[in-house]
Length: 81
Image 1: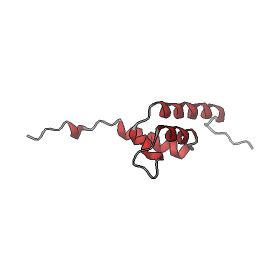
Image 2: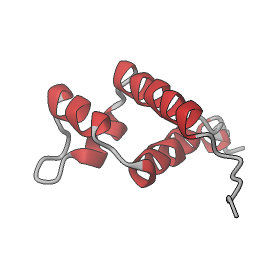
Image 3: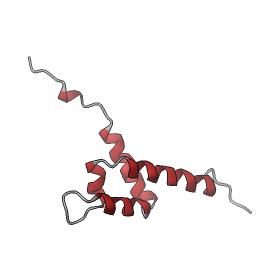
Image 4: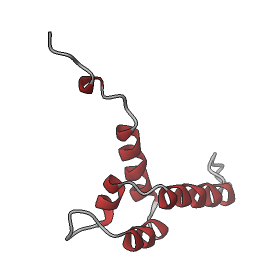
């Protein structure tokens, strides 16, 4: 019996390619830090290479960091009265 999955392999590959291109195009210093192991922040070329070779778990980690970075930090606007 053939197993059905909501994940379409062809569509998934193009979606992952688009996601990788978006992370390469918008490199934030926090994203660079994910793939640099011996340096506080990595280089752009090394980051680009690692994103191209990234698996689904590594991309998920980048999306999680992106979600944290776009949250509104209300404590930055808090005035102590």
